[in-house]
Image (cartoon, rainbow, N blue to C red):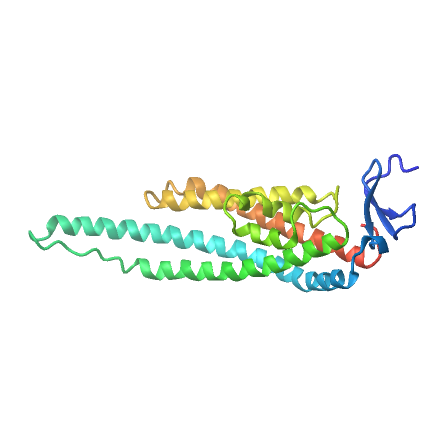
Length: 255
């Protein structure tokens, strides 16, 4: 009898495999390692796990780099907005004193260094995204090989980041499905995803408001930094949890 036993991996009572997932009320069909009837070639699962092991520290580093770059971009855009406002005010002042028929040309040279910094930040974010998505793909493949239920395929989970509308929710599914059902840290995937979306919205609001008022931009800036910190911290925790769970599976231990 398993009444009152918390969800987790336990010895398979039917001896089909070494471990079977107990969901807290009944035995599930999810087993590890997959039995002969599952038709799964464990060699590709082991290869995917090796890839996940290689990339998970890089994925955590990429997540931290994402936080640093976003803070840098926020500072750069606030500087850009302030320089833009100053140059525009100077142009209108010159326009009022210019000789008739000889309007001055706007001088926007102060914008170039900051815009270059923003472009470099975007280039770094591209590299960060590639590292993270390679880790996600390998982690999703391992989860599939372990028999965890998934709402998307590993490939579509990666592609969903780039598809409008779908990218508002499907990446969250792909990340949370890297953990087994009822894993205590699965909810952190949802909170990390909501914090990530909130960061993007608040950054856009900060950029927009900053072009009109530097002081008013502080209103969306503060919650943007808070949501960014939450997204990085929760994402770091999620990556670690996925690695620990999948490493435990390949060491033959219930997680």
